[in-house]
Length: 142
Picture 1 (cartoon, one colour):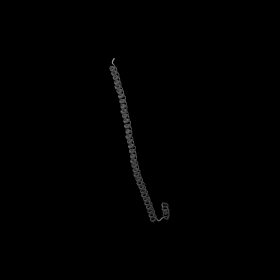
Picture 2: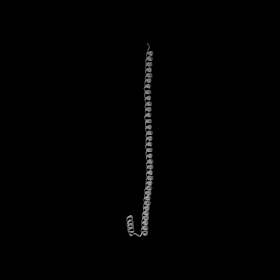
Picture 3: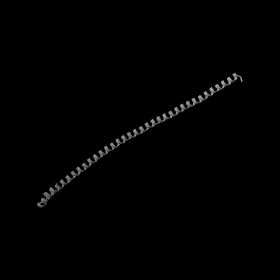
Picture 4: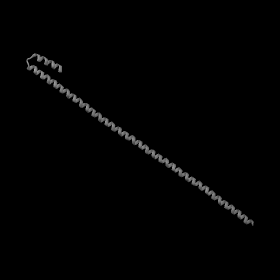
């Protein structure tokens, strides 16, 4: 064989080797690029999870706050109910004292009427015994 042909074959082999090495390097680099892309996608997924978690925490906080607001509203309603119940109890005790007062007045009127009856009986009767016993009754009633 001719030196030129041998040299040409060797060079072609070297060129082919270089081309193949480039292809291998390219594949390796593509793998690295793909890995980087995938890592970005994984990171994106992780971040989306964190964002979702933050959103959910906000929703939970909102729910908790709504519960607190509802509790405050209910406490106000209970306080208002207790206040109106207290007022109705005041009115009831006032009504009871008015009933007791009118009962006392009617008892006073009754004993006054009894004493007037006894007094007129003693004036109209001549018997002093009846007169004396009427006085005793008046003292007992008062």
